[in-house]
Length: 288
Image (cartoon, rainbow, N blue to C red; front, side, top):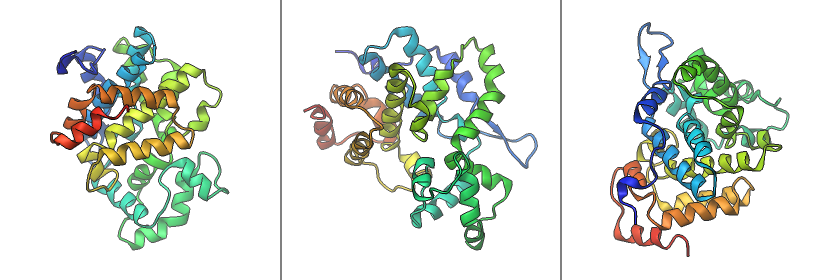
């Protein structure tokens, strides 16, 4: 049995990880010289570690998995500059009113919305209500909306900005890496992707959501959640499987590795406390 330190490892040098995490830093829009430090970098690192383990378990080769882990480290790049207070206000307000917060859910409810213009539609519908609630829809506030409803567009802008820096790091950036980063919000963009790309995209969604549902800080700031439970995490993943977002192969590999204890240390770090005996028993039985 592998030691805890060997489980779900980083496959890229720590110096490169540090350089990649710095790409999440964002210049403050109104305070010259001030940098908004990338939000919840540890989430990106934990997710990337989990993704590489699942991809390896499903038979992807070492070099592909290494490149994939780099994409996973940057999977939240489209949210660089996230303003915790303002972002939280906008999306708490939306959640309380049952307003969709993801592009595909928005389009399902508002079918007249032009594809790729979900941010504009949200502002058209709710600008006055938000401002009446004391949330001024400044350009910076619109950016916080774009981080969810316009994620593809914002990610593309950020990648264009940082690609020269990525190249200097010696990283070869392939188009499929951006594809897998978009799958959760835009599964339709991978409709014609190669099966292995689609599978890597599914793995990222499964691991990112599993970590996020165990992440105390992210639950409070991003999901407006008060408690993290393993039951809720897998219940949500099962709904994604039912919706055709996740395959049985990916879910099976995630369950198997979870049952083997591959992610225990990662999940405990995310939630900020150790598992109870009952939770640990539940994890060990995850595959059965």
